[in-house]
Image 1: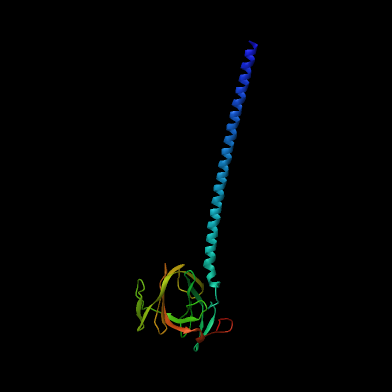
Image 2 (image 1 turned 30 degrees about the vertical axis):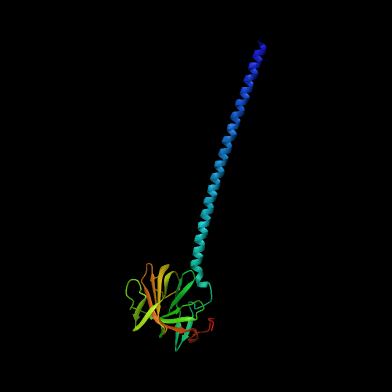
Length: 224
């Protein structure tokens, strides 16, 4: 009888130990799952932080791109330059620059100039220049591919959408984006139309002049 009781007792002890091992294993599994969840959350948080950092980096780079085009590439013309053209001096008081995956053009107001109200730089090295004045002959709406301006027939040279960068003073109201259209003829007449997204249209007409016809007065370093 005693032997039977001992066997029964041993069986109960073994069963209790097995149950304890099962409970312990379940606890370990639960702890592992909890750690896995925490790691996943941490990873998700890390991914979120990385995404936020990447977004901030993109925004910063975008801001840098919005500031930097005025300082990239060849010198060209700059705000504050004074140009000697024919018998008059043209002071470049401000600038509006258009960039469309690269340089498009710059236009500079020249208050007080007797031969031009504006000066345009049509290429980065400032070899292709134009003297301009305001034009009121452009009809409203989309600019057509050909227009009679001042008795001359101008046809489309190029058009597109661009980012807008400004500096200086004596500028009209502008916005960060604009549509631009350039019409010209074989004689060097040129029309520049800039339609800002939420600002009045800027329309300028004039004539191309070679860089050799314009001198940058001392203080600048425009290449010959």
